[in-house]
Length: 426
Ligand SMILES: *Cc1c(COP(=O)(O)O)cnc(C)c1O
Image 1 (spheres, protein in one colour):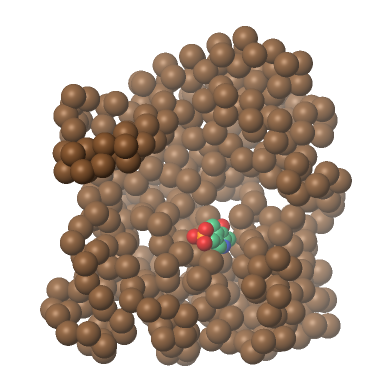
Image 2 (image 1 turned 60 degrees about the vertical axis):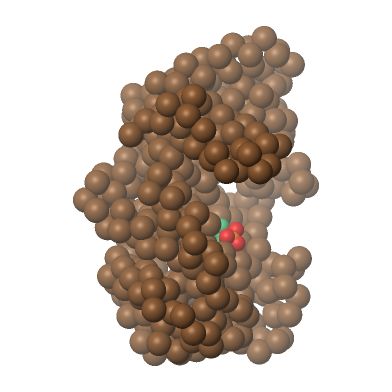
């Protein structure tokens, strides 16, 4: 139900701290008025938002349901059990740990469970689309462990399982990560599992970006293949900021002990509650429609952009994201991203495979459709979105701020027509 603009949804906050309350309202307006194309971002439902702002916040509950270090867990145990059981059912894994504070700590728990310092981990290279926590140098995971990296092929922009197999045979990693942050193609979980089995490695599917697509049946599931599934809950899954580790029965105890007491103290119970709500929403039939629409929109947007001469890494997408190499457009990624931001189109600059530019000013941008799909921007509008991106990237090259302002106004009109979940009509 729409909240009236005049209604203050946070009267206590407004009274106690008007300065902070005004900042929250400003962020609401920004999220309402802009076309958010960052593929790791989304809009949570009003129900998820409400669940994450509850008195569950006030409770300490180190341990696991039935095995806590503090009393008074009559309700919290039920909340955590509900979240874990929903996760296990939705992702069809034996065991779920819903306590990791976020995706990076969840992955660190994987290292604690299966590796000793100095042991080898095989993951996708960061500039090829991997994540920092898959053994990249500047991360603790690449400092305390020996990170070995696979990439994508220069000609296809896709992972080459022959390269992965050769590396795994030669380097004998204890853990292999598949998945990443800028991977526009289906992850071949079965192929990775075969390599992990042959070389005696634990296979971790990091599905942080695509968990919602998996839940909705729009991406194959890692369930029959991965020993551990690591995921954030706030990307395509549309939950609160948090994470989960799902495991086979064999690895449940090792992962639980690594999360607590290995790495964390008390879980964030208000987040656990909101994860439970998001998992219920993701199990509903409408969510499958959402997940498939995210992919359909990304495909349509990719085709429209390709038709305007944009160079898509791997030639397109199977999922929610597009990685665009702007070298041919003669505009650096950061320059394009900043101009798009001024036009109300929010993206991030991103390295592309074999990038010749520096990581802080790379050649590409990364865009995705989860958030615009959550607000019901119709598929037919993808041509308009592609035209805006084209006009603004060209305007960034020529320094044409008038065009940027024109697009900003047009974006606002479309956003007004497609109100975002969880936001008042500000
Ligand atoms: C987002 C992401 C993470 C980290 O999640 P945070 O919550 O930002 O710590 C880990 N792995 C992958 C593949 C991701 O995309």
